Image 1 (cartoon, rainbow, N blue to C red):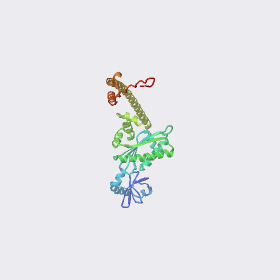
Image 2 (image 1 turned 30 degrees about the vertical axis):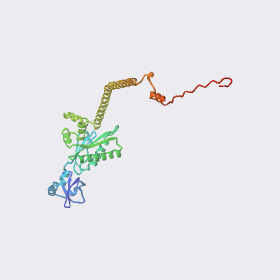
Image 3 (image 1 turned 135 degrees about the vertical axis):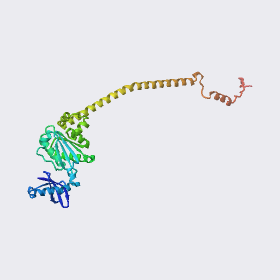
Image 4 (image 1 turned 45 degrees about the vertical axis):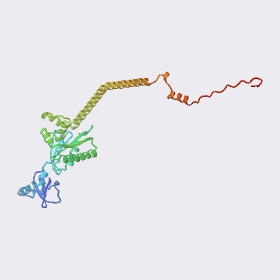
Length: 330
């Protein structure tokens, strides 16, 4: 029989057995959360009164911080393939409760003891058992892990640790599966429980797919739907939404161009007309300033002519040369 160390005090350890009986033993370097294989002989040596007395004595210890914390759920961890499993985990990350949410999970968990195991080990064992049942054959499958706690940061960290553990399991055993993990709100756990499903699957339905559950019949349909199909629906919906947005954007772009082209053309026509008018005005101005060719004179022509007239000296009269007679006499 197995027992879990739930409290250590004054050199003694309190161990909670699978049958619910608390046993007091000397501390042998135990740590809270350790799983110990108990010998039946040691239990039988104690009389009925001794067992009851020990249980009563340990009750006070169990009400202390250590024992109470061990027995109280701190996290809720869900594992969905199509077998859907919900585990209660204490603050020491030990599994203290296991629930098969659907019939597939009940078949997978039959004969499998996950209580008091470290949650990383428990979820790896559960995935290995699901793989043995053939859920990852042929095209493979999807594994969804959700962790919920009152502290969202701790829930997120635990989800990351569990994703790493499951991915190691997949690689070591050559499984074909995609792993998704994340934190779910603590309120979502309560809402999911109300419909009898895991918080991980409920999160996909309400947040990713945007669906609402209005009846238990609808909830049952989702409970028995594999995560792979739900994720395929989500991918298809996102793809359709993306195509619709692209088509709408293309249509809006074409409409905007059609609206802007007439305005742009009109603006260009106005600019061309203004340019032509400006050129015409410039030509008219130039024509008004130009002097006719016949009236044009070189710059300062009159002044130059006057200067020439003033500066040129008068030519003296030269007497006429007398004619010389032919005989040379004058």
